[in-house]
Amino acid sequence: MSADPTQVLAFETDCHIFDGCGFPAPGLHSFLFEPLWGNGDSNLYFNKTMLLALLGSIIIVGFFWAAFRNPKVVPGKLQMVAESGYDFIRRGVVYETIGKREGEKYVPFVVALFFFVWMMNLWSIIPLAQFPVTSIISYPLVLALLVYFTWVSLTFKRHGFVGFWKNVTGFDKSLGPVAYLAAFIELFSNLLVRPFTHAVRLFANMFAGHTLLLLFTIASWYLLNGIGIAYAGVSFVMVIVMTAFELFIQAVQAYVFVLLTCTYIQGALAEHH
Image (cartoon, rainbow, N blue to C red; front, side, top):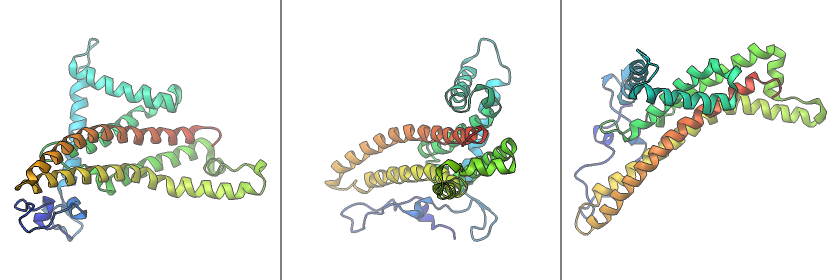
């Protein structure tokens, strides 16, 4: 179902306090957008979030292509920034979690994940876009499933069929009868809960952050009437504070997402669960 055009803006622009209209609080309608192409009632359409995801991917690929198309021993500014970002993930996340010998082959995958998630988060505070793509559950879910299937395939490849189930369940005969209950809990947690929590952790933080930003932004406009102007100033200050806080959270959530990814890969490669 397509969103109402007025709801795409998340609030009525002619509504202020003391005008007889209620506060237009943000809600689920704030996360719905009219299709830019196609029919929203069908499966074939293209909307704002898809456009932002596409543009974000192009920006990331374009940035690294421009930085490394002609690499130099003494790097320029762009190459230095790209190398710093790449090296931070390689050394600070992959090497620290998986190890240098085993982790080197997974560096490109983890770096791509980090910058993609970060870019999708950053759209929240970029003018005209002003919407975090990862606040739509389907995007974090696809990324989490990509990590999940990578983890499953690596575990099978490293340990074989029997070893896979031992790794996933952590079955230990020394625990006695409790071993079976513990194995069932581990199996449920790893095979079913893990991809869900991996996706929801990112989604929930971006959803909540965007809702708070909308709340204070709408309030700043809504209070611009009579004595409410004084309160509008306070609300606008909160918009600035929340934007700065979102910048921090956006980077942290991208970091946590790839840190968990490396933890899962490390678990797949380890001899013991």
